[in-house]
Length: 141
Image (cartoon, rainbow, N blue to C red; front, top):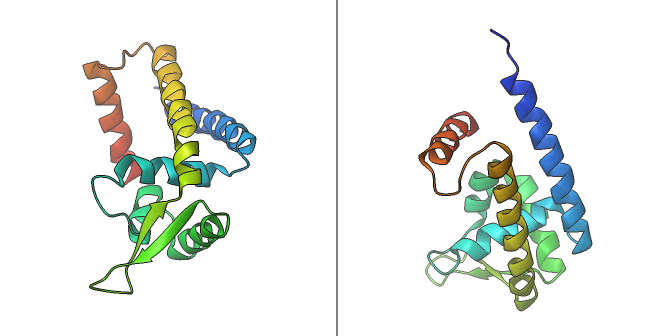
């Protein structure tokens, strides 16, 4: 049996990463910044988002998350608000500037996922798509 899936996944990841970098540059941001904005915007109405959530979601170390969030705060993309019951915990909130950008970012990620699904013959609502997602999630932990 040929072992090609790992190579193909790596190649696909490289293409998607380069494309995301190009899109992010059009907004004056980085790939990580657009990903963080998309993540926070999709969840901030449902739950509080903290740095540890960013670290977990993107599988990055605390130092990397800290530097990314500090730069985003400096660039008026987000604010960190201390919690009333524990000032050590800081809730992450998007600024109006980021909320405006989040619409374009969400559209970009949705269109990219749709293209990827079409390329591999998956419909957006299908069982096959859910199965593939479950398989990929096993290896992302």
